[in-house]
Each structure stands twice: as C-alpha cells, then as structure tokens.
Image (tube, rainbow, N blue to C red; front, side, top):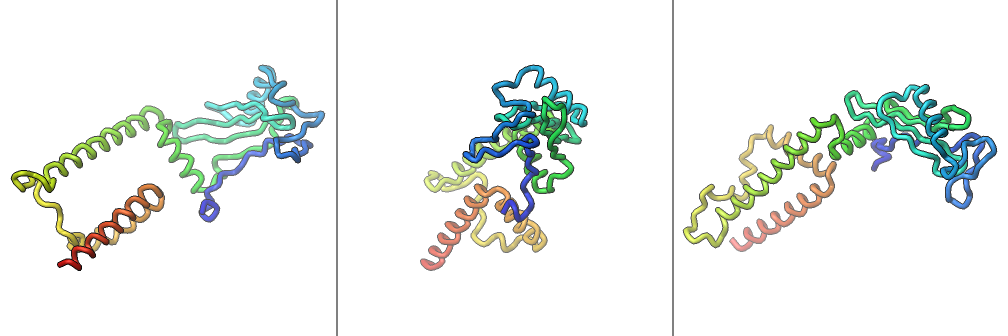
Length: 223
C-alpha cells in the first residue's frame, strides 16, 4: 500500500566509493581510501564531515551520525522544523572531504512528505511552541469530551431512579436518515477517509457499526 501511493522516502546510500558490501549481511567491508569505521571516528572526522556538509549547502540545525562500520560514510541530516522545513541529508567521506550521496526534501514524494510532517507534528516538534500549544489544547479537549461523555451516560443510565434524563433521550434509531443530503455526501466519505488514514480508529468504528446493526436487526426481529 505504501508503494502504491509512493510513500517511501528516498534512501541515503552511505557506502563509500569502492566499498564492497559485507556478504555476511553485517554492514560493509572496508577499503583503503575510506574514512574508517565508527571505532576510528574522532572529533577531527566529525568536524570534517560537518564542514563538508555545510559547504554542500546544509545549513540550520543538523544531526551528525558517525559511520556505522568500515566502508560507510558519515551522515549529516537537516532537522529544521521551522517553516519552510528543511530535511536534506548527505553522506560524507570525512577523509576525502566530499559528499558521496544526497537526498533532497524537494525530491520526496508527496505521501512521504505528509507522513514525515505528520510524525513531527504528532511529536510536538513541528513549528516549535505553537505545535505544542495546539497539542495541549487537543489533549485538554479530549479529556473534556471523555468527562462529559461519562456524565451524559450517567444522566441517561438505565438504572436511574426517576427514569428521567437531564439531557433528554438518546437519538432514535435511524435518525441519521433525516440529516440533509449534503451532510451525508460530505460526512460519510470524510469519516471513511479518516478511518482509512487511522486504522485503529477505523477498525473500532467498523466494529461499533457492526454491533449496532446487529442490535438493530435483533430488536427489529423481536418487534
């Protein structure tokens, strides 16, 4: 499904030129002209990798990652969450002082961009304090919805002594049929799209509808 919507982000190739892949599946084999493995990486190599990345145009906040093993390059990736976001990354041969591979944020497919931005927003790091305030407001709103939901149920509980509900009776079955047609035409696809984008919500909503239909069919048969 991810491939169908082109949701895969470009993968940075961290193999150094001339390095042979490790046939044992545990990384890459080394070669004489590389920058060495993670064990030999030092502050000088860090500085060289950062300078090379800066010269290649990676400005702003970056994350520098040492080589994973012999025959692999340093990775320098932008992590600028202020709009317009910048998420370019480069693989750097620190010994040679050159960029061996690069991925550009502009080259990411739309689905991959939306996925990346969605994750950053969900973590509260996109756009800084504004994102965090929005998430805090959403969290407070959800807590209020849960509180009022339980309160409404308590007011309408079947074992209520006086048999009256302060908020009135629940909507009758089939009341959705009285909704305006434009609302149904817009609302139903929107709910289906949200359920598809958020599978956990979609599965629970589908289960609720299935139980509701079963209860309705059972009551109709008894009537």
